[in-house]
Amino acid sequence: MKYFLVLAISVLVFNQSFAQFNDYQVFFGRYNDELLCRKWIQNGEVFYLSINPNTLKTSIVKDIKAEPLKWDEVTQQYQKTNYLKAWNVEKHKDYTLQDAGIEKSDSTLNGFSLTVDLCPSTKPLDRNFFKQVIKAFEVSELPVPITITITGLWMKSHQSDLKWLISQEASGNLTITWVNHSFNHHYDPKLPLRDNFLLEKGTVIADEVLLNEQAMLQNKLIPSVYFRFPGLVSSKAIFDQILSYGLLPLGSDAWLAKGQLITKGSLVLVHANGNEPLGLKLFLSQLKKNEADIKKKAWQLWDVSNLISKEK
Ligand SMILES: [Zn+2]
Image (cartoon, rainbow, N blue to C red; front, side):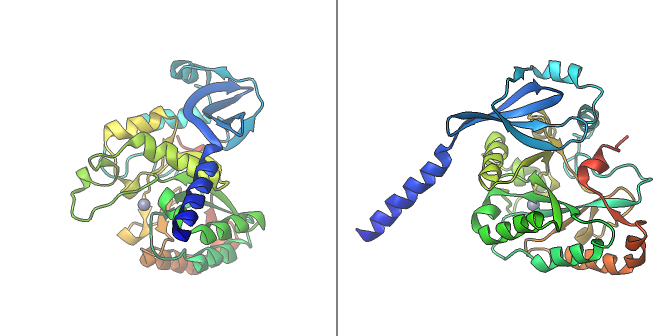
């Protein structure tokens, strides 16, 4: 009986926290010069996720008068913005099974962007990795810009690690771009890539994207305009579906554990979820090697949106 009561209460609490979000949907609209891309109802009020089409940063707005737009109108009205230029670049990067999407930027940049994936894991977050990155770059840039791609399942089972990351933002050590990496991030080592990750039979893309955004919002993270495919694996159909939600897929040209190297403008990929320590080790050894250049700002860590808005 006691067990049943506990269960009943926890179901009630769970439902209440979800009940705060209603009618979460893809919605395009104009608000001043910004582009609204999502709409939902929370505690009786209408909220929107808004993209600044030049900085590519997102924010949450409410109590506004939104002018709804069809996607064709978005492409016309925002055609000169960095957002639409990046979206158009993406349209031509949808054809490969692996690593589709923007995977690097202008090669004249003195630096690169670091993306850290948090795929589902039973292991704790490697907090030491973040501490080392902060220590290395704080001489030249603080808060240190970093991109974290996150899954619903990781958030569910790593609440204290997530709070720790958020506290690093609050204390001014990190500035984090939070990227949707799908809710479930299914992976079956026995399946070929063409049937794996989001291409696995029975996967509902809308749920993987929109449920994860809601989970991010409920954890007080503002979803960015980017999406990272689990395993960097996609098909043209799924890639185009992600684009239709207004999202920009992020590939990588420097998945360190796979032997790829950091070059100017790279989107570096490591995992800090405990499942790929090699990538972290390789990155930390690069930090040591480039210590002098970091001080001179000749080897810089770029905010991903600044990097991508330089994309030609
Ligand atoms: Zn992943």
